[in-house]
Amino acid sequence: MAEDLVLDTAIRDWVLIPLSVVMVLIGILRYFVSKLMRSSNQVPDPKMVKEGQVIIRARNLRAAANYIPAKSFRARRVYFSNEENGLLYVPKGQAQNAQAQMFSDPNMAMDMMKKNLSMIIPQTLTFAWVNFFFSGFVAAKIPFPLTQRFRSMLQNGIDLSTVDVSYVSSRSWYFLNLFGLRGLFSLILGEENATDDTQRMMQMSGFGFDPTKSLGAEKDSLDIFQHEWALPKFEQRAEAVLKKLVVSVPTPVAETVKTEKVKTVEEASKEEKVAATPAPEVVTEEQKQVTKEEVAEEQVQVTEEEVVTEEQKQVTEEEVAPEVTEKQEEATEEEVAAPPAEKPAAPEAETKELAEEAVPEEAVAKDETKEPVEEKIEAEVPKEAAIEETKEEAPKFAEEEKPAAKE
Amino acid sequence: MAGHDESSVSRKKSSDSVDEISTFSAENMQNNAKIIYYSRTFMSIIGGVVAGILGFTGLTGFIFYFLVMAITSVGLAAKAGFSAHPYFDSWNQILLDGFLGGLLSFVLFWTFAYDMVHIF
Image (cartoon, rainbow over all chains, first blue to last red):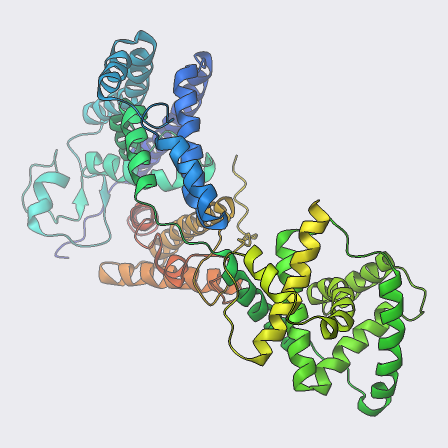
């Protein structure tokens, strides 16, 4: 920085601050004006809305396609992209019509023009105002140095070539404000502020042709979508999550005393649970998966004979059922109230009864029930070892309950 | 509406899984992205004013900007409990998203404050 210009204080008072304030106010004004103008002509075209909703439906289908079986997905896809009466299928002739209609529709054209104007006019006016009033002097100093090439851009009114490029005219202050206040507007006006020109311009170009082209685009993307059913893997996933939760829960441990109580409480709760009403029918699928894994996990733990986790279960069981005749709902409520392990506790309450029911029944018929249920379920859990086999039986019983509950 | 609720990051329903099929709640993700954006904009404005008052010029100022952005990233990460997965798509979204978006606001307020204080 060669020389350090001393600039008049009046410039600050009468140029920088007023210019910024004016630009902020104009931005706010523009926001409100666009809001007002928009609300006056809010009669949505039913055809547009219909097409928009169809597109949304198709997108939802694509997004959630992995959670429905393959057949359902295919059925839905055919409904959308069927040649004759599929929703997304738009023959070429009609496509052209829609575009032409867009342009000749007076309301639409007026709307777009209004939006355009409300964008551009304030900018133009302000720019002209700045040029007229605030030209010919140095307005500000930008704190970082720039190369000489920027001189012509930044120092428009200043005709001295020896002045540092950092000293800029008010026009450049205007542009700096124009870009820098966008962030401020997004903070004070919320998301829906119409002051971001570049975004508006991008929106503008895409608006007219949206419906017909996007229908075709949706159809294509739906056609090429590969369906991959995610549900079979949910079991492992739930198991992993629950394992993490169970391991991370702090275990209040008092070993020897509990082991004796363990067995009595277990038997007592067995009787009680079997006598009590079965699992509530309105269990969501997620919880069913969770219970499956919880049951499977319990089987694994039982076979592996881990005392600690059993104690944990028994401890929670004890908390749940201090008395033999305690009801199901009270148990779950108590467990929900217990601070550390809410989540694993609640499904544990429901799985306990499934476990107790499954454990006595498991010994009865292992092989008989394997085959028919296997035919029922399409995508089966991968079979690996003996542990895996016990896992299978537990989910089967849960599955049997599910259709029973639904019917 | 000016209520940028910077203090609440919504948990999106995602799953940490073995097989990468994740379920996101789009609305929560949008909310989180908006929060990141607001935080960064706000911090860049404040950072600009601070840089101007302190008299940073040239490269120092830009370094200060990146410093402020880094502090914002750390703050966001701390708010999300240092685990990006339940809240965002990836770490990159917390750390790098909108990094340069606040640059212009920063420069504006930096210039403004610098001029006010030093060349008044």
